[in-house]
Length: 514
Image 1 (cartoon, rainbow, N blue to C red):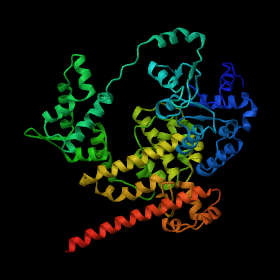
Image 2: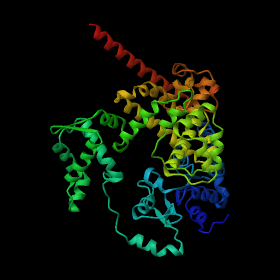
Image 3: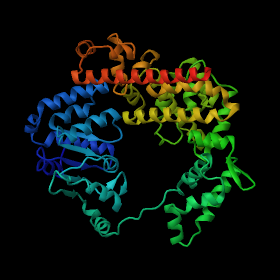
Image 4: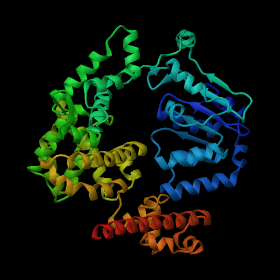
């Protein structure tokens, strides 16, 4: 392993007295650079806040379940990588450690610049790219703008490493005007604009076209369209006509209201463009919905909008043939037949809709493993995905399942889902067995901690609320007294809230009897 850009020297000039961010083009590059820095930085850095780094590793092991191979090598020297492949818990722990100075350097992708407030004394851009795309002016400013902390550092500096072949492109980038900000209401076939109009009508904020025009007139889109010589009212009328044509909005003599399908889309926050297709898909599924296992429901709540994964044909065939008999029957019902998977495995050409079906079912199989209590780490390894992406899939599926619950409440013909989805959604949100569900209500308790509490004999929120902090530390394992007190306090607060809700409900019943 070499260091051709001399990144380790640039970082060593800054740490550990100050912090440093190294922006990398890809997730894999983040991990490689973190390992490179761990190898080439002065090994004396291992002594800097040594005990806190050891505690950091222990925290990761306790809260996440295990520590990845790369972080195990880089954390002792004060370096970590940060990208969407980390789980939410890992990102939080790494960010807190960096903010407190336990970690002095992060190798990260551009998403950190856009979404997380973690400044640094020195910012290094390893290459003028994000993925395979050349940097834009706004992305460059976001990353470089992390240098310097108001009230902490008197100055900050940004270094961009530029290959010889890209010097001219970088010069043009630095001389380019500031990027303009444009309204997103028209993106994805006016998805946001149609959702805005549907919400205004559904909430009865606007009941006429004139009222909608007043709201439209106050948007950034209207301002920009007028500057371009376009009529924003025409844009409004076209979007409204499409909502009416799709059967989402009804016009009764100039008074606008939502149809049952429109109310379902509005309350479930389902994009107007797919509301009709979604209703039809759910309706058709009812004719042969298999409830011998949870796979069919998991397929229905698998999000459509997530990025496609690269399918490895031999792996897909092995995963398919490993399914249980009742799961194979579900696969046949939804169209993923053995013949189709065999065609994929043999390298034959597939139609676009067949590829999309296989992609969709691939995500469903991941959800199925998570449902069956396999960890995010196990599923990520099995499907060759980043663990953060697996966790994102689970969170998106739980969100979509909740949206479907609200969607189906407004459509009488989908009554069966109103019965099936609520409890299913709650369990999917946590992906734990039913006996752990009560403990997962605690805001500071994740799946691993819930298992520890249950194994130690704390089966309910009441058990936790009545516990002594010292007893909790003794029985649960690697947990500080401060954490134990926080868990107990959260349990007591939750019990008080439930008691207040029950009291209020009882008072309403008594008032109704008077």
